[in-house]
Image: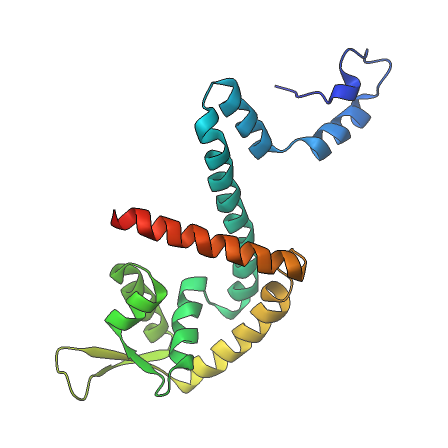
Length: 191
């Protein structure tokens, strides 16, 4: 289905070239706005803004994750593995128990185990028994892991974090809004 901009409604093909019309349609069409319009047209007015918000955040997440992946892929890292290395590099001893990694990264234990397994196979972390608790395994960053996370962080700062796609004032405003959203979602999950 072709959505025709208002300025071309009723115009004959001889009046407007196909390529001109196609370029304007591509420039003006926003699938998320169209989804919102459809929600409203179907009478789901109470859900339209929420749907638009969720889909917009998910799409922004996809776009940002693609930038992150593009930056980390040449280093042989995924974002989840990078997060483990970064977290370990920020600790005083360079090590944490597996369950603390899971909790601090707010991921499922299986995700942590998978990331640590891959990092260990690459020689970037090592598992060690906890000196005071025989039931606990510590994950410790290696020197190779420290070097890689330093390089990856510099690349992410340069290519992604310093240029997130918004002006600094907009970044600050959005951070506040997202913080409120996370708090609201965390609260509703507990209810």
